[in-house]
Length: 98
Image 1 (cartoon, rainbow, N blue to C red):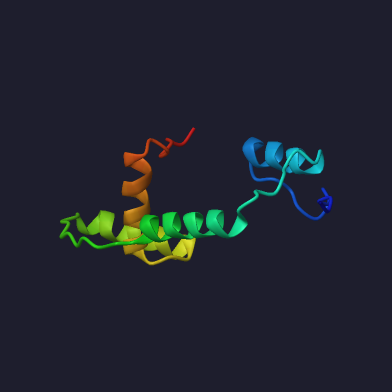
Image 2 (tube, rainbow, N blue to C red):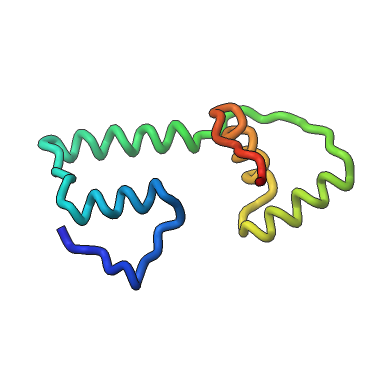
């Protein structure tokens, strides 16, 4: 595998740093059935991104405007931001600010 230049890419967190170091130590191996694994990953991604339920949600005008501002800052539609927040909360990965 090609080594990643530490000057050209800085990891965003410890987990990403550990993964980069693992790759650099050649600890990764190709799977035998790459096409099957690729299909499984694509199916999982599709199922994760599939949005097949619609809801109505009442928010205060202040919260609605703050959501819109945050979504603009993140570069995503505000509905996507709300969906992401709900998903992260339900999966336990929504962390409070320190």
